Length: 170
Image 1 (cartoon, rainbow, N blue to C red):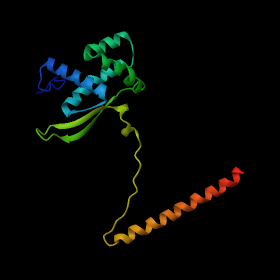
Image 2 (cartoon, rainbow, N blue to C red):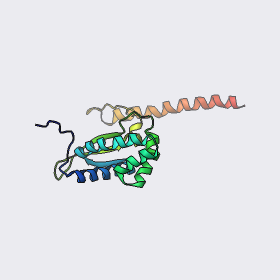
Image 3 (cartoon, one colour):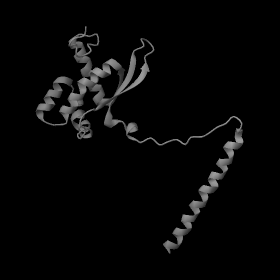
Image 4 (cartoon, rainbow, N blue to C red):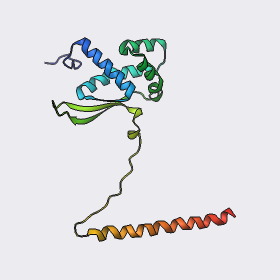
């Protein structure tokens, strides 16, 4: 039974696991996105999110506490600088895990883990693509007919505002 088994040991000793999570946390802070296995990403999320919360308050004590976990001055500068600015108003949930599939060699589940506010692609709202209907019988005729009408309709309104603007300029 799994009574009181709080976290995944990842098949490593405590020192090895601590060093691996610190290295992955440094890479995540420096690069904003890393690729790893799903089990490691879930453990990394538990490891790095309290550090990011600590970084919101820029004090000597919080820097020392975070440095005791990471042991990397460049990562500390990055964490207390740009990362802390972006997540300052966020109440939590600083990382996102995106599943990618399975690795070829050992079928381990692979994923991205990234800092939420640093992904410009996710921040954009998706524009809906125009759905086109295609039939087997229509061939080229169905596709060409609307394409010829569209430029004529687009040109007519473009000329009208130009005519209206000319008298206003005088």
